[in-house]
Amino acid sequence: MNTTPHSERLSERFPLPACRAQVILKRMELALLTFIAVCWAVLGTGAITSFIAWSSRDGERSADLDASWQRYAWSKRFRFQPATGQWPHARAPRIEGKVDDVDIVIEACTLTIRGSSRPCTRVWARAPLPYPVRVVVSSDVRLLQGPGVHELEVVRLGDPFFDHALAVRTSSGDAAYRLLPPALRRALQGLLSSTYRLALVLKVEEGEVSLTWLGEETRPAMLDEACAIVVRACCASGASAAYR
Image (cartoon, one colour):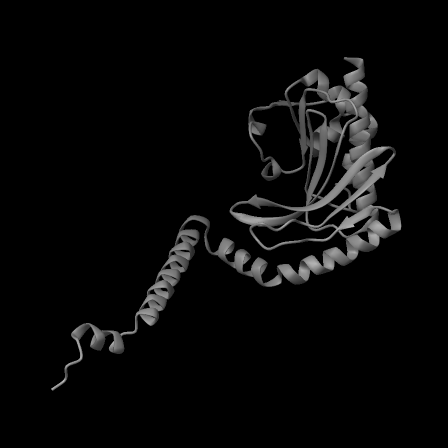
C-alpha cells in the first residue's frame, strides 16, 4: 500500500519551480503578442517592420556613427562621447566643442513620424544672452513637434524664395525678423539645395538654438555647416536681446 501523502505525490508529478517557470513564460508570450497586436492595429505593419529593423541593425549602425563622429571630433579637437547603456536608458553618441566662443553639442536623436521612429541629427547651443521668444523654421510640417508649436503664429518674412521654401512660426512676428537676418536665411536655404537636400527644423526657444534634420549625419562638411548656422542664430539671438 502506498503511504506517500497525496501532496507529496503531486509535488513529484508537478514540480513547483517548473510550473512557475511555465506560467511566467506563458505570461511573457501573451504580453509580447498583445504588444504586437496593439502596435499592428494602431500603427500598421510599417511601424512593426521599422521596429524590428531598428532592433536588429541599431548596434551596427551606432558603431558606424561612433567611428565617423570620433574622426570628426578628433579633426576639430572636439570631445566625442560614444553611445552608452541599453534601451530604454541608452544615451546617444554626442560631440561637444566650441565654435567662435559658442559651446556646441552635436547629438544623435530620433523623431516619431507617422508612428515610425526616424533617426536624426541635432546641433544645439545656448545664446550668450537669452531672448524670451520662440521661433520655429521648418521645411516639413511633420518635423514640427513639441508643446504649443502648432499654436504659434505663421508669418512670412517678405523674402519670396525663403518664404516659399521654409515655413516660420513664432510667438512674435517682429522678433522673427531680427532672429532670422538675411545671411541666416540664405544659409538655411543652402541646406535645401541639391548638395544636402535636408528635411530640417530650426528652433530658437528662450535663448536655446537647435537645428535638427532627418538622418544620422556623417559628412564633415554638413556638420561644419550646421554648427556655423547654429552659431549664427545664437549671435542673432544675442544681438536681439541686447537690442531689446
